[in-house]
Image (cartoon, rainbow, N blue to C red; front, top):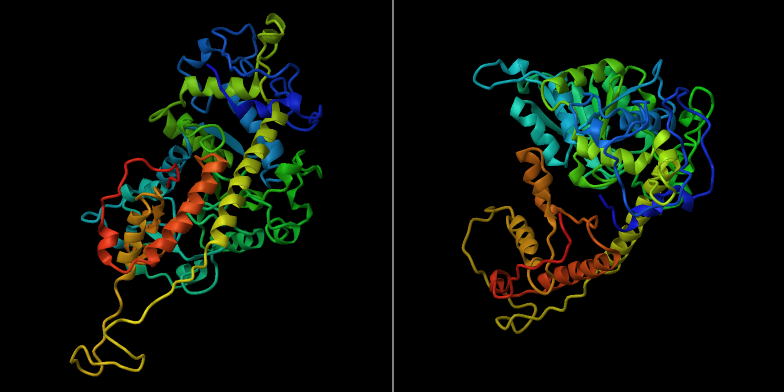
Length: 508
């Protein structure tokens, strides 16, 4: 199994030779640095000579029926990473627990199953219907996970920093003034706080405290889905960053230590870092870190919740794919114990280890931030357009006019063409020479009420593109919008003569 290209940048020989001295003190602890040269191949042995099951990475064990909570070596690594580095300051006695999942959606589905009852409209009373809070615009695959259970989807208004607490439609307004004719007050919240999809907002730490306080008041479970947590951009500088990550001691663990990595210390802290009640479930995924096709992630929560997730997994998905878990484990951890001594230096697979893993995450952020800056710079520079109009031939002078319709004085119809124009623009951008596919706002509307105003938005995504394609597609978007608003004949919009099945990789 060969991984080609940039993945090798994370191998520790490209990093300073430093090791972490803190963490789980047991025989299964994963080393932080590798000791061999990088390789462009990830080779998983058929059988491992290592006797320690917490270090044994081979196909002989990975392809058997496995542990429900995850392949032991990989779960140990993730558990160590979460408890020591990613979330070192959790206020749980004994720390949180971790279980591997078949991706974040799988973790969400099982969490919803734990905390909700199925409601059927023709069978159950409206007062028994449970609710799920979410952002006003949300990732619909997650929302659709809850809908088959008859759950009432309750959107909360957002701004440039994420879910709002105050104001009309904010969390306080929704909860304090709940209309019980809609069902029970929501007791579950689904939220993406870092790089929210589709708005891209990052929720400041102070607002997290406010939201957590309301969840305490109304006994709400917070499901924190964080597929983009490592993509927090610092382009706005230190002054802007401090409101998202206050410089205090709350990011230190009980022994006064930070995560051990400046990159991880720079990130906005999770809801878990303030979870004194055990009401937060965090979902993580390898989809945005290694590949979406992995269908592998992990769930972090208090131990009693993780036990319930494990029980559901025993009778549903069981363990994630053995192929995928062994590949990811070998890529991150490399050869272990006796296998290192048995192999020659040339064939040794060192793995990233903890230092390389964190370096890989930091490198991903740098690469995405570069693309983001390219796109935003071009969009910002092209957001103004000078359009020259002309006087209609029907009016020789500006002060000439005539009544075109006989109507009562106060007859009035609200303009209704904006949504149609937005849809026309979306289709127009697909044509030559622009050839762009952008995501219309209605794709992210959790309710019909939100969908009615979602036409105002489009989501642009640069994730699957090289940097030079980002620049080209961003210029095409600017030109496409400019040309669209200069069209005078509606037939020019509907003309499909220049349609092309080939699109630039500017995907939703």
